[in-house]
Image (spheres, helix red, strand yellow):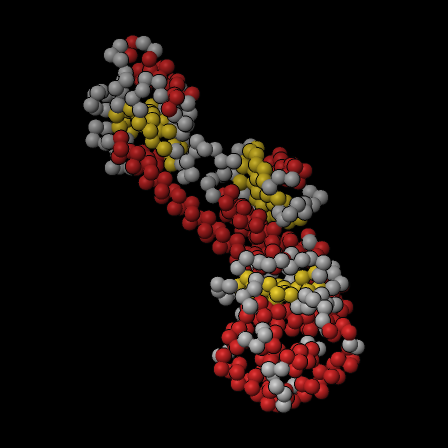
Length: 483
């Protein structure tokens, strides 16, 4: 968890603040270390500011709290010691209106405790110093965001190269000015990029990856010989780990490494997933001419249902289609122009999905998939027309179970012969009968005008030479249309 005492902004080098000509600040005591940074500016005239400091502050004071006899006692020693104990980064002393110069005893105490002491001239206000600190923080934050954004773009481009894993590692090592290593499930180094660190650092990084694997942690960090180490578990506990060694440890490195970890999780996912490899193999075999029933065994189920789905509020997109597949428990998703098709193992229940209208086929073997696809399309049309969230094909047994299949098909062909060559008529009649003769709902299901439905149904009645108002006729036609 992040430390709540540290602000979510990059620290500001004290040297950058001293370089501001408009402030005219001057360091008069303490070490001049370029690595000294401040997290914020805080003003206090308390004799003991310790309880009010979080650490990393530039503490500003005008010396109001300083007693007149402070120069001859241990007052400043105690004062500076408390600031250092609280983690203060530097002390700024304002000249005027209380003191004409910075007390000599304070200068000596800051030198003794190695606390940078900054002289604030009379014309510079404390609020001006604080504003300058926040301006520098904002600039640093903007630079950090730009760096992270550029790194994300370069990592994404690397992931699309023919050699994605080595390319991502090379980009990551370059962006953090360190080394990036991909470790396999057994802790072996699979690929790496960047300059190899010292043996001790390399060993510590390998050990850190083992810590992540053994403890099932997402990340782990450490510091060895001023080198920042981090390990990121890839995927869902399959044992792949990304190790990163960075000598700088600058803000943004963790974000950049996290992006690389996500990309590597995706890139290694198909290799570490048996089901992913099986799907890839099935696709290749299908493209090379193998029949569906032969490659279906690679997908892990004998019987499947086809689901057709449409979102209620907008056209389907790739993200929504992927989310629907995940919700239904299947990665076999096809995004068509206005419908999403999902192939789901029959032993998994396809429940209603909020924001979607679904049509579900009957369970089918691979050689029956085309027919199941048609069933799902019809079920979706019925669901949309009836404003139902989900409709399943063949939810109840019908009369077809009482008639031999061959005889039922022969009867259907003879009965529907006059309209069989016109799909628009057969589809309209089937939908109209399924919706109990509702013109409006049939029009909605077929996405046509209600007058078009009336004309097609009238044409069917004419070609079939029958009375569609007769319930017996409707029943017989419905039986035939279902074959």
